[in-house]
Amino acid sequence: MEDSYRHRGLRKKLVESIREKGIVDKAVLAAIEKIPRHFFLDSSFLEFAYQDKPFPIGSGQTISQPFTVAFQSELLAVKRGMKVLEIGTGSGYQACVLAEMGAKVFSIERQRKLFIRTKQFLQTLPYKVNLFLGDGNEGVAAYAPYDRILITAAAPEIPEKLLEQLKPGGMIVIPHGADDIQQMLRIIKNDDGSTTTEEHGAFRFVPLLPDLGND
Ligand code: SAH
Image 1 (cartoon, rainbow, N blue to C red):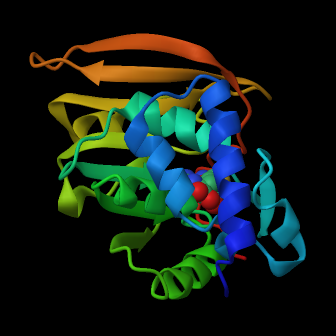
Image 2: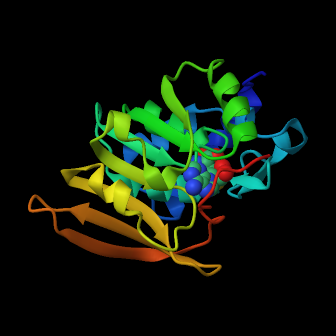
C-alpha cells in the first residue's frame, strides 16, 4: 500500500485536530503523524482513515478513534525502553503508536482471525511488536512484570492478574465500566502494592470479552 503526499497531508491535519482537542505529548503526536493509519483499515474505508473516528476492522471490532488512541497513549506516560502490555491488539495500530514512542510492546488479542491477520500485516511494517493469542484478562505472565498496561476494550472489572503483572510504580490505563459508557481510569501501583486510582473522563469502547472468540 502507498503512503502518498496526500495521505501525509491528511495526517498532519488529523494531528492538528487532536492537538486542538487537548493532546500535548509530543511523542504521541509525532507517532500519529508518522504512522500511515490507512494501512490498518479495510480498503473500502481508506478515505476515512484520517477522520477522527473509530472504524470497523472485521470480526465485529473497531480501530479506536485517533483521539482516543492519543488520549490513552498520553495517559500511559510511556518512556523509551518501557515494557508495555496492550490488551486488545485489534488492527495493531495502537501497538504501533506505542512502538513508535519507543516502548517494547507486547499485545494480546482473543480473536484468532484478527490475531492471524494482524500478525501477518505487522510483518510488513518496521515495528517489532510481540503478539499473543489469548484472553487478555490473564495478561501475558511469561514477559511480566510490565511498566505499563493498556486496556483497549471496556472492562467491567479491573483484572487482578494484570495488577499482579505490573511493576511497582507502574500504571494501568483502563476504560472501566459494564455499561455503554466507561470511565477512563489510570491506576498507579504504589511501591507498597496498594493502588491509587484517577478518573479521566467518559469514553465508549467495545467490551472486553471473557472467553476466546471462535471466529
Ligand atoms: N487497540 C486496537 C483496538 C481495540 S478494539 C487497535 O488499535 O486497533 C478491542 C479489541 O479487544 C478487539 O480486537 C477485541 O477482539 C479485543 N478483545 C476483547 N476481549 C478481549 C480479551 N478478553 N482479551 C484480549 N483481547 C480482547
